[in-house]
Image 1: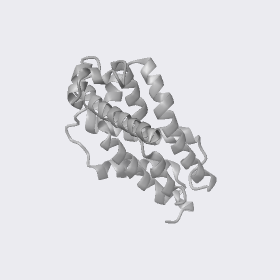
Image 2: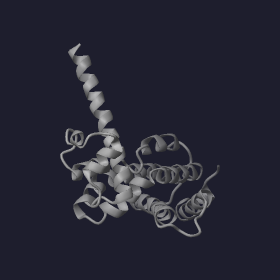
Image 3: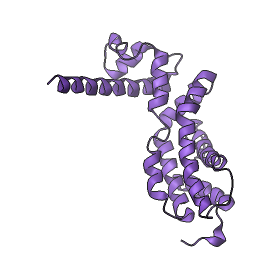
Image 4: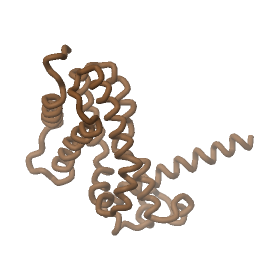
Length: 209
C-alpha cells in the first residue's frame, strides 16, 4: 500500500507540473516572459499562487523546465524510426512533412524561444545543449545512414541537418510568427523545402523509388 500511495503522489505531481507548464507557455507566449507574473500563471492553471511554488521556486525555473520539456520536436525519434529503412528519395518528403507539421503544431513554444530565449545567452545555451543539439544529432544520424548507402552525397551530416531544420524554422518565423501578408500553404512550404534539399543532397541518378 505505501508504494501504491507514493506512486499515486508522484503521478499527481507530474500531472500538476504539466498543468502548470502548459499554462505558463500560454501566458509567456501571450504576455511575454518579463511581463508575465506567477499569479497570472496560477490563474491560467486554475490554481492558487502558493501552489505553484510547491513545484517551481521561481518564474525562471518554470521557463527552464519549459525548455527541457517542450521540445520543438518531441516525437522526433518516432518520426525517424520508420524512415531509416526507406530510400532517401522516399523518406525525405515524408520527413519534411512530419517536421513541418511538428513545428506548426508547436508554434507557441517556437514563439517563446524566439522572443525570450535567444535574447539571453544562458537561456540560449540551455536550449542548445538540452533541446537543439540532441535533435540535430538524431537527424544527422539518419542522414548519415543514407550517405553510407550512397543515396546522399558525402557531406557533414550535422551541417545538412542544420540546413534542413533552418529552412523549416525560417518558414515558421515568416509564415506563423511574423504575420506574413501572403502566407504559403503547407503544401507549398513542404514542396519547396523538399525540392531544395533533395536537389542539393540526393543523387537522383542513382535512386529509384
